[in-house]
Amino acid sequence: MTQILGHNYIGGQRSAAGTVTLHSVDATSGEQLPHTFYEATPEEVAAAAQAAAGAYPVYRSLSAARRAEFLDAIADELDALGDDFVAVVCRETALPAGRIQGERGRTSGQMRLFAKVLRRGDFYGARIDQALPDRQPLPRPDLRQYRIGLGPVAVFGASNFPLAFSTAGGDTASALAAGCPVVFKAHGGHMATAEQVADAILRAAKKTAMPDGVFNMIYGDRVGAALVQHPAIQAVGFTGSLRGGRALCDMAAARPQPIPVFAEMSSINPVIVLPQALAARAESVARDLTASVVQGCGQFCTNPGLVIGIRSAEFSAFVALVSGLINDQPPQTMLNAGGLDNYGNGLKKLLGHPGIEHLAGHPQQGKQAQPQLFKADASLLIDGDAVLQDEVFGPTTVFVEVADQAQLSAALHGLHGQLTATIIGEPADFEQFGELTPLLEQKVGRILLNGYPTGVEVCDSMVHGGPYPATSDARGTSVGTLAIDRFLRPVCFQNYPDSLLPDALKNANPLQIQRLVDGLPSREAL
Image (spheres, rainbow, N blue to C red):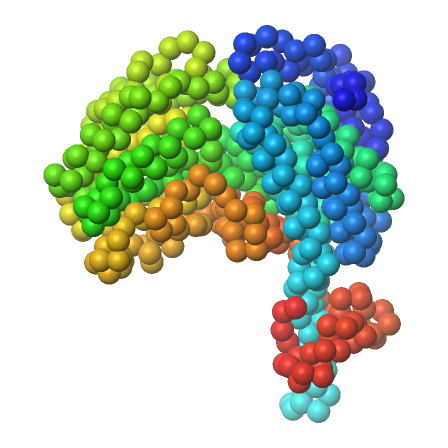
């Protein structure tokens, strides 16, 4: 393992001009780790943004194949990070080695997936309207459209995924694929991890002859505002709290030139358990649901924080089953002390709120999180009470019992935007409750049948987004190949000769030639 220096990465060089120092902490013991990190000064933040801006003209002009080589090289470097690296991540996060090894594979897999997107070319979104010189009453000019990268992107690392949503995570991968250099703000919870991943990215950049400044990284809890407000930054990717994401959105909107913020922020991911499913398999549903609630100490953005069922003897028995299972769950260490404090505060709000009853879970104490189960009156959800809409980030969930099918629809209408919603049911349930899917389409980005939301596949079809406050822009996703769309914008060329067009729009492009041979319409997406 290379020595951890704790320096910022600016334009391909190390920089440690500041005097404010930071330290990583052992997530289990609270012990300060022997690495010093230097918070970026305002001048270093500006230099990182300017380095990205300097790299942008060169990087965006590279062919898609060249950028794909870069992403593949990053993936190779990530896969080469060995057991000593895994040990560092485990110590900073208290996550088990198996989880980190799997997350490393997911992170390198994301890079390779975006390399495939670049090679197949559909990200250009090319559209062609050929000239119609004889059209009456006016001729139509030749019009061609494709998409280019927005410019330098600021990416904020997430606490709960030190690899897959962090330094080389989905936001970084999709921005680099789009042709956008990145300035990454390392999360304070795993700075040593961030440095080793940044080293891997820069090794890949050197091997593939990428421009200096294609990837930059800065440390510090107080540098985010200066980064978002720097005029060189053209978009922001963020995964974290609603408060943090909303603050970035407000800053970006207040700039002289407002920029988009793609923030994934808050979700309680309702699970709807329907009557026939309870009659057929209540015990297995209880076990699987409990496992999803406590998986990874509940530190997933898709953790099921709300469970809704219709009043019946079967539902009461199901609640009792889950209560017993929650009481049997051991406490777990959270990612960091701040997360544990926030979890405790969230539990206090639930415990002290009228209309909410504590059903199961040992008292929260010590340095580990205790799984908890609550039950809330349906009126709180129907009336939009904020306490049920606020995510409690940790191993807890809230049951809501509704009177009938009509009240179930009313409760779902009261939900704010979510990343996911899950329906647990049998064929007869799906027929009886056919209104649920169109209703949930308006509320969430991903609807699951007879599954559990923890676990997000990285593929073309995945949507990891949803209406506010799940994300700041429901039109995008932070997981899956559609994530590249967030960092692209369309450009139209009118009456350009073929020799001056971008390669993706030229008549000589093999894709264009094949379309003409096949007699396809002139206006279409690649």
